[in-house]
Amino acid sequence: MDVELSSLRWVPLLRFRGEIGNESSPRLRKALEDALPPGVNRLLLDFSAVPYIDGGCLGLVWAIFESVAEPGWLGIIGANEQIQRLVRIIGLERDDTVRLFSTRKAAERQLDLGDAGARDRKRRRSSLPNRSRPTRSPPIGMGLIEHRT
Image 1 (cartoon, rainbow, N blue to C red):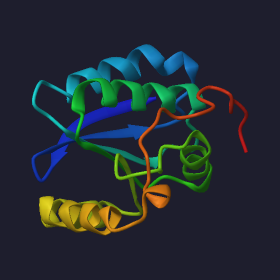
Image 2: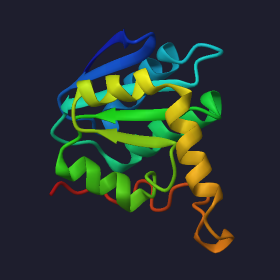
Image 3: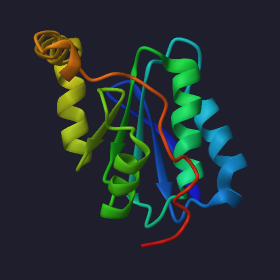
């Protein structure tokens, strides 16, 4: 795994290359902690050059982000089908905490919308009956999906 820190619209952007397996956990943790100084509540991860990420590593990403950046959001750019499937299985797509973007341009458009887009989504959710309203809870199955598809 290689990782490079930059920014997109003043939001930290970690660009990953290569497979992200259990052996990458210490470097992954360091990269995430470096990208999330106090006060940062949004983070972008570019996975367009990542063919595989271990379920435990994806759980680590979520845990570190949630511990320091609430009430922000985490954007994942360019995730392949396997990574998108893992995000759904773990349950990270339940609300606006984790957002999937097909391209960097799509992430840029969301950043340009800023809080206006988030307010619109929150307003739409608040009009739903309580039983239909998305809830925020820890992901399920972290680390259980260890095989490659």
